[in-house]
Amino acid sequence: MSKFMLKYRKIVTGILIIAVIGTILFIWSNSFVVGKASNIESQKVADVIQPIVDPKQEIHKESFMDFIRKCAHFTEFMVLGAELILLKLSSKKPQIFTATFLALSVAVIDEFIQSFSDRTDSVSDILLDFGGAVFGMAVCVGIYFIILFILKKLDREKS
Image (cartoon, rainbow, N blue to C red; front, side, top):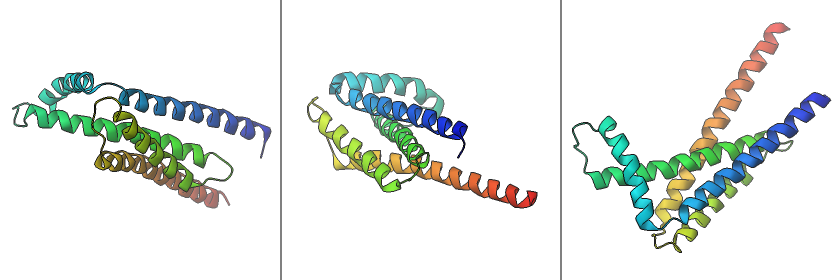
């Protein structure tokens, strides 16, 4: 491997490590927010999104706010999962199990932190968070294999 590629790999790895740490800190910092403040934030987001998604206001505001909260959890863990799997794929020895274990650990710790901020912690939230991470990983792995397939096909056509 060329010096350029090694340098490139180190830069990408460094950026991904910073992104993973930043995402974990973002997730956990949200868990320290007390329930009332968290509900106010969710309500603000729901007030902006509901008129777009549900202009006739057919969905009860409380149900819609719960849906928004679940989507937010799924999305932040989807981003974490994507970052973790990209980090593993950029390493010399990609081990997908390590990325999934770390994502699950972050989800469990997230719920544990919530138990100290007058919010409820639940196994279903852990499963939702982990599902988001696995979805993010699956999308990235799928794209990775599509790119490999295309590159191999292009290489065969050159020969």
